[in-house]
Every structure is written in structure tokens, then in C-alpha cells.
Image (tube, rainbow, N blue to C red; front, side):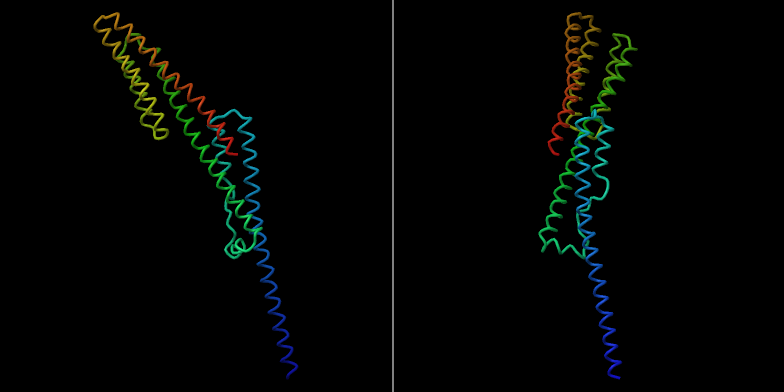
Length: 238
């Protein structure tokens, strides 16, 4: 009887030992995979940043390209958290703590780059919107009679209203609206001078209109230069 009891105890002890071994091995595997995943996130994000940095230097900058880069930076696994069961290790193991710190620092920097890319995209979309509106109006103006100031004023007012209605780049929209206001003022002066048959005032108003239009064109050129400047500054974030 005692021998049977001893054998039973031995079997139970063996089973408990095997269960403990399985638990230890399973925990070790979970721990290894968790920290391996964090290292993978760090490695993958670094590779994406290096690739995009290279493309920003070589590719011709466009809204489509920047949108592609932004999506790429935001895609994939971006979680630097270890699973709950092993998260305590980062507080007692310097190596694991470094994995977590490096990953989080890299992800924060990458998210900041993606955010800045999105801001440049908004800027370039406004630039394109303004250019498209002016190009469309220019085509219409070519069909108007030279002294049809009512239609000319209506056309510029339409452009101003559309620009002001946009949501992004509020400061630039306000600046563009002010430039268009100067054009509208000169158109009204031209219309008044035409009605009064005042050639002197007409010449002055025409000169004012030329200056106002050149000012708006100058703003468009500045927007193109500013877009490239923002991309150059973005490269410094890498």
C-alpha cells in the first residue's frame, strides 16, 4: 500500500513538474515573441523612414507622392507595448527597458514626421486650389469683352468666395482674399472711370489692377517656394 502511495506521489510530482515546465517554456516563448515584436516594430519603422528619406531627396514632390509617404509611415504594426504578462520586465531588465524606450522614441518621431507631411499636403492642396481657380477664371476672362467690368468683378468675387470657404490654411486663405480684394477694388475703379469717361482715372485704375494681379501671382510663386522649403525642413526631422 505504501509503495502504491509513493508511486502516486511520484506521478503527481512528475505531472506538476511537467506542468510547471510547460508554463515556464510558454512564458519564455511569450516573453521572447513580445520583445522580438517590439524590436521588429523598431527595425521596420527605421527601414520605412530611411526609404522615405531617400525618396524625398530624389522624387519630384507632389501631393500624391507625399500622401503615399504619409500612409506608409502610418501603416503596419506601430505598437511598442509588451504583452501584459511580460510588461513588468521592462522595469527590472535594462535591455528590455531599452527596447521599449528606443521603440517609443522612434514611433513618436515618426508620427511627428507623418503629421508634418500631412501639413505640407494641406499647404500644397491650397496652392493647387488657388492656381486652379485662377486658371479657370483666366479662361473665362479671355471670353469677356475687355470693358465688361461687371462680369470681371463677378468672376473675381467668385474666386474669393471659394477660397474663403475652404477649411485648411486659414491664414493663407485670408491673405489670398486680401490680394483678390485689391483686384476687385481696381476693377470697380475701372468701371467707375469708364462710366465717367475719365481717361486719367482709368489709367490709374488699370495700373492698380496690374499691381494687384502681380501681387497675387507673386503669392503663388512664394507658395511654390515655401512648399519646397517645408520639405527641406522636413528632411531635417529624419
